Length: 177
Image (cartoon, rainbow, N blue to C red; front, side, top):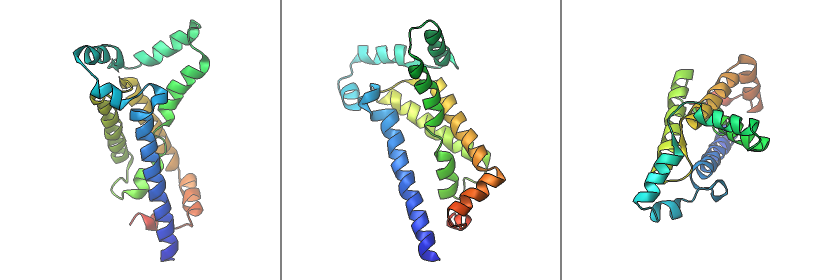
């Protein structure tokens, strides 16, 4: 019994670490999304920083979402770009709804989960500013936190929670301890 619990806990922890690294790569490092920490931060001068601040930071809720939707309506963007941006941001943090409460015992309520996921997403957004990579956008924050929060709620529906427990040898609650 202990070996099986150890194996399940180890697998979940490894998957959590892998997923976390993937999210960090996706949000801060991946050159495929126009992010290059080394070339941005090490070659930045005052004009680069000013340009980043004026073009890559959005503090107006839903301004970027509206921009994408309007650009699609005006045929300036392909539908997949709009879907990738809006739904990608909604789904990128979704697996943390599974990992955080099941790895960290103290994250045992919606509001605690909400606080932790909000802090994590805020840290990513601030690091994007520090490293001049990606864009620091309130819409990203809203969509990231909303996606993870919806997933948390779904995973805590009693039937779904029981199914997850059964899938994980019916002993998942013991792993939390």
